[in-house]
Image (cartoon, rainbow, N blue to C red; front, side, top):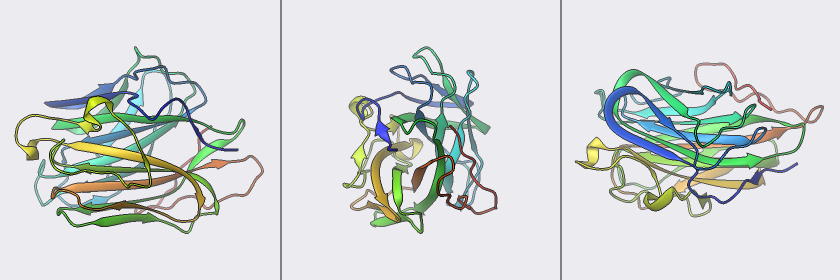
Amino acid sequence: MAFALVGADNDLGTANEKVSDTTLGVSPTSALTTGNLVCLAAITDNTGTTSADDTTEHSVADALGNTWTKAKEARYSAGAAADGIVASLWWSVLTTGIATSDVITLTLGTARTAKGLGILGEWSFGAGNTIAVAGAGSERIAASAAYTVTVGSLTNEQHLWIGTNTMESGASGVNAIDAGYSGFNFAALAYYGTTGGAAATNVGGRAGYLIETSTTQTYDLTAQASADRVTLLVAFREVVPGGATEAPYPYIGGGYYPTEG
């Protein structure tokens, strides 16, 4: 029983646009395999005008029948639409493989201009097991100060930790991942998001992953450029049939995250 990255931690597919509409699609750069865990990161201009955790501005689907589950979404806003950023992290254990000609689509409830998508990675795991979100956290900030996202009080077992650091600035400024995580190299840009025009008209994100046995983990960000920011940290776990259980991950607003496999 162990998570294992499939292939290298390089570009599995990115998409971006600066067009006012409600959808953005991304196709993988190589085929994604049935039965594996795939994670997708999304970033857009905000619609809601308050900073909040567990927002519902993003949804993700494909035309193949795979179930895409939101692990975490959060928003930073200073009080107006499109003045900040919304970031989300999605996952699916594929019931149907995704070819390079297929499309995974982000949909918004309200048309927004700046949007970015990144297929973060593909992982195999133990045969017959399922996947669940063990915990998740976020931080929202509008400054260059160092800060940390922490997720803890988990069962002491192996977790796949994924952190995303996103900002309303595209590629401008400093947006370095936690040095303890392996970074995803999104082609030449090394990030997913938009370019061109003033910094505040863009959105950009970077991400890293860590496979580690622990009950607590942090995603540390230091020496970042000043920008409107949302950072997410999610812990995934394998669920063994008939094995130890962990309480469903609670989040603000109630409910729980289902498992897939």
